[in-house]
Length: 197
Image (cartoon, rainbow, N blue to C red; front, side, top):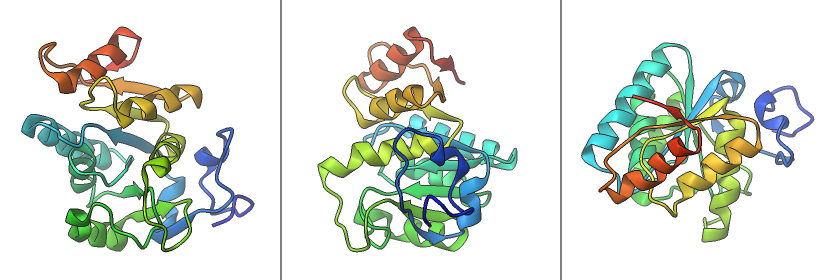
């Protein structure tokens, strides 16, 4: 889908650097429905994964499409919780490359009932440099981003920063000050993110 076409996601077209082309597998109509990004730690706690799955399901039933990055951990749980109501997986490589491989079954379900999108050409294997641009698409598609768990240096915090730069809301789940996976989310709350329970 090209930036000049009516199917292009309206929210994404308003960021300062929208991709000129999006590759899409699945239901492209989801791209123009109200969306919330849910992101978090790859090495998520069991409690964090349960929370992400449950809140994605509840918000999906309220009419929100859930966007995330198909990474292991919080992303996987968020997609799983929103399979029945609508989810968008924003991937760092080409839409035909499943990464991580352990999410192959989930990827197949999202292609059937949701959408997988990327700005990278078909066949592109994801590398470290592809992930920050991917993160700006998660926030750009959404009216806001919910960070469930995040260490102090994490891609989830990059997504939150990009959301703020794009004029989006940032939501954060509080946690124990002794748990490294909550230091980033607690920091977001100190900086004014909306506390989410």
